[in-house]
Image 1 (cartoon, rainbow, N blue to C red):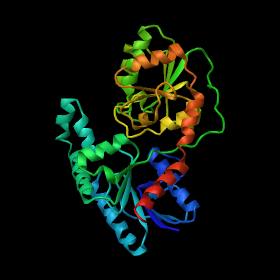
Image 2 (cartoon, rainbow, N blue to C red):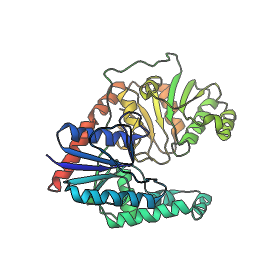
Image 3 (cartoon, helix red, strand yellow):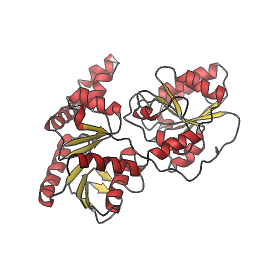
Length: 359
């Protein structure tokens, strides 16, 4: 049995705020299940499990100095515990290994095509500071890096000069419901869905523009968009009027039960401008709902065109029209894909990578 430590800002077992929290929760639970000695060092948690170690130190991902203070405190504890390995989250002060789930800020700055946005970066002190610290931490190095997609791996290689050999791509996992449910709102119109907590970066504007094209061409469709800030966003309200989408688009608040949301649509649309993976893709497929996904999202790497979903670059409207015209039945293949990407598979792959290091 191994002695293992995890260092994360927040450990959740119930109310997840993103795919990263789900990944660590499922990975940690499997190490505990198999009898390994596990300690989780975090700033906050929704559980009092015996393996949780709350560190009384501020941890703000927007303030690299607080992150270094937090990690320095944990490092002093780790030195005394003699762990076989330590896994931390994302680009953080290196201790041993890390599991990356988000793009580097350097990648975002280099990819922006908006000259004004690029120029304004020079006046964003916090962003510049975070990029500086990320470069420093990457230069210090990790014994092993796990990344959730090939897209993220390329980011790290290109922006930090890290050797490809030190990065292993391990896709996230998903829980698969026992049955595929029928759509909760049975009518003739195709229902598309979008999860857009960050409307711009998740491709919300790309989606609305494509829906506007469908509306002009007379297509019958509905769209359900999870975006809690809709009521305060006058710009989006204006676009809904401009594209004449008032009777086609429904905005939803935060969804406690995402399975119910997936069951209410025919297809999940993922038009992300930038996305290292997007766990919603696997969750939707586990519910038997195919996806139409941007090539900018890491999860496009698991899509087999026309079999379990569709990918696009600049032709989202065409893909949406194809889906409406053909109504492809991809439920079974979607579910089979989701079953391949279990959380046990993630756990096994991490163990295989660690075994190759001789641990």
